[in-house]
Image (cartoon, rainbow over all chains, first blue to last red):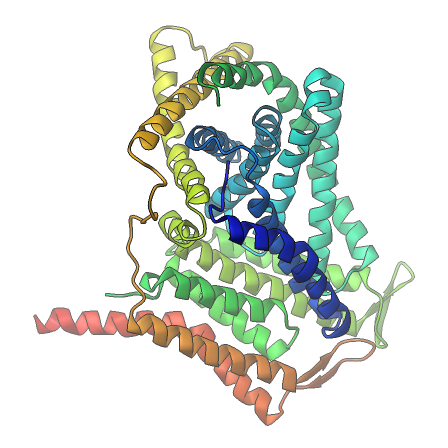
Length: 228
Length: 289
């Protein structure tokens, strides 16, 4: 699954971004800009991180089949975002990561956010959400062995993913609203988002446990039948 | 009639990113005022009718404006005490400005979302990577396809007598069955699509997109104009002195700042001006014929 076809570009990006671009941005933020620029810096780092992941995706060059399956899972996640209150997007990204590998999980998470935000509104939050859901899918792929074996661990992963995602997005909300980081505002944001966070964690666990068997069977069957 | 959103997607995207960026990274009340006014005007002209988003924005504005003085007690001028916590004039003013910043940014981004339809998104990403744009284009297509298929499966299940809406558990069970069929169908069908695409040589050449946006002279002029105006606005913002704590200190009327405000006002009003110009031209073209 190679996303950026030119090998040199890929290589340059993979070394340039973590060793030059991100440190340079952070240094610039520490020395040149004042406090008000946290937001633009974090935005830059988020975009670079997404680029880095995309440049890193090259493990299995099987081609279109796996890509199309990822596209189908992404579309399901996008459609799932229209369901009111209980949203299966996390569960679907985790499923993709578990059965199709970490890279597929990352792509499913990042792309489903990018596409669903066509309907829900693009904004500076898009890169952060892409990174957030992408990482949820990515780690699910890396942890696939224990997560596939134990139902409890899978549920735990759903809870942790839900809470961590909300907490990290709230940091960003505070940065946007007040320029710098303010512990009181952050606390207020977390407390006011608490019902949503709880709902989110619950729906993650619910969907993960519900989808685990049927979705696993379907994806496993496709893998076996077509050698994806 | 070439409206603002019909310009090259690169130009339109850069325009919205620039305007939103300037709005988001300043606390200058003049810039924020202009931005809020222009963004509301711009959005209202594109999204005809519908008061709901405006209502939401108004509520959001009030909540955000009130949030800061209630939680942030910096500032030298105490207005009154609430539960032994000082409510300061500085925090109140800052809250109103921050609320204006967030509301204006949201309005700009709403217009941006209206402008960036899926074909334009594909045009922008397709050049970055063919595989990525494959996922994008297929997913965008599948979203609609899945909805249509969901309806088809549901109707078939109903006709077979397998779908009961009256009882909650049966309804859920029926829905789960429809979902299961939908996913299996989509996955199988996806593989066939992939085979067919491979057989026809997908990915062997450069990807073209459905809509062919050429960079015309007018796009170049637009981008150049935006760059100059944005640069002017940024210089203007830097020439002004704005700080809210511990006391409000505003030095807004330096000559460079005023030039910057005018530049930003023109920049923010650009879509409306272009559309009005085109509408007038269209009107006269029709009446001439």
